Image 1 (cartoon, rainbow over the protein chains, first blue to last red):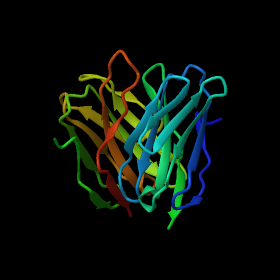
Image 2: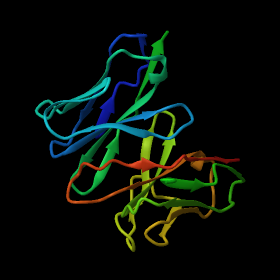
Image 3: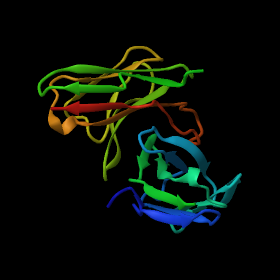
Image 4: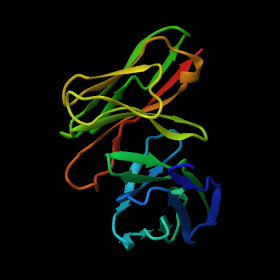
Length: 110
Length: 115
């Protein structure tokens, strides 16, 4: 079983809609959760992190964490074509180890 | 502020050749990492250095060696390149403190092809 699992997609949403990206993880001891955006041919860039149960909002982005269900999600409101990218979920576990999912490809259709 | 700088950006090697990928960060981060990224496989950790003077194997270390030259620099060496090492390589750094809430900063990547 992989440490971090994401639906590879592709996920397509129309411009202005809400995009919902999901991630599950296997280690109950995981403490911090990160979302990275990676444009094609570029390096990943950090867009959100969350470590407490509940929601964390930053502009059009909302990260949601449910540790009981071992589930973290990223919502993108008012999706724009510039949001088209691959989104990587990363989980930090004790021992200073990060585990990355394989990413979900998002396409926002104008 | 340059962040994490990787060189070279592109490289083509013949099977059996050796090369060193260079990485430097100017953010005073104590931890540095080397990942490879392959289609459908995601990011896989090759080696990491939790602090200056230490290095440890990651998930896929075979065929690679690393050197943490100082706090800023962390190099990755392929001693005898194989076609299976064709990949995109990313260096990353992170501040390693008492809190876990510090994400990576990635370099721009090295696209390596071994023929």
